Amino acid sequence: ARLTEMPELARARSAYGHRSTLLHYIGANGVESHRQVTPLNATDMARLLIRHGADRHALRTCMVNGQTAYMLAQTSAHPQEAGVMAALLAALSVE
Image (tube, rainbow, N blue to C red):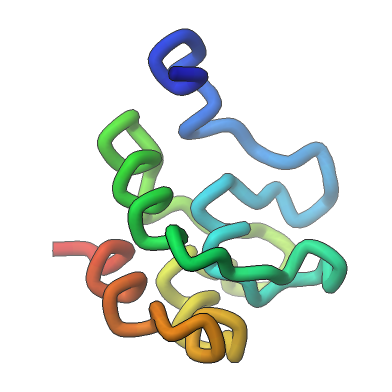
């Protein structure tokens, strides 16, 4: 409901220097270790954000070349430990 009321949240960026989007946080491989949690519904949340306009191409800017949410998830232990890695990567992949 929140995304319907405020669709700009799907593309919003963190005020921190990495400028991560919510999709980046779902990737769960970042600089804020206390936020590195992958819930069991991470894939559903990623799909919801994408349906509401989240950009799978968006780059997190704290690394030299930037990173997409897919790149973060691909190198993160958190989605693997949660058992959602394959489904999450499929949802975050760019056609």
